[in-house]
Amino acid sequence: MKDCTIYKTVDIIGKKWSLCIMHELYKGDYKKKRFNELKNKLQDVTPKTLSIRLKELEDHGLVNKKIDNSVFPIKCEYSLTESGEEFLYILQNIKKWGLKWQFENPECDQTNCKTCEL
Image (cartoon, rainbow, N blue to C red; front, side, top):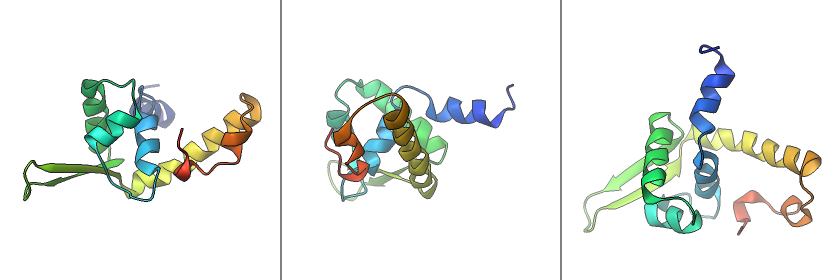
């Protein structure tokens, strides 16, 4: 099973906080977010875990990290890569499945995830 593509993919995106981080990077009009913006939105994640997950997602080509060292303090922003944005289609289908089979949430059903404030 170690060569199964599904197992390998789940090992990348199935870790706690990974999908939530990608979702937060997707939300809003501005496609880039700083570490503290993500930390504030994902209130229960520890800074260490957030840092680890961002690095893992970056290593797998789902998240891009841009460092601007021309300013002080150094500015670092995270965004989804093309691969990460394409994965959001899968996340949208997960939402559709959850609404159909598991959860009754009319507000979520009527809301575009990009503009969701939850």
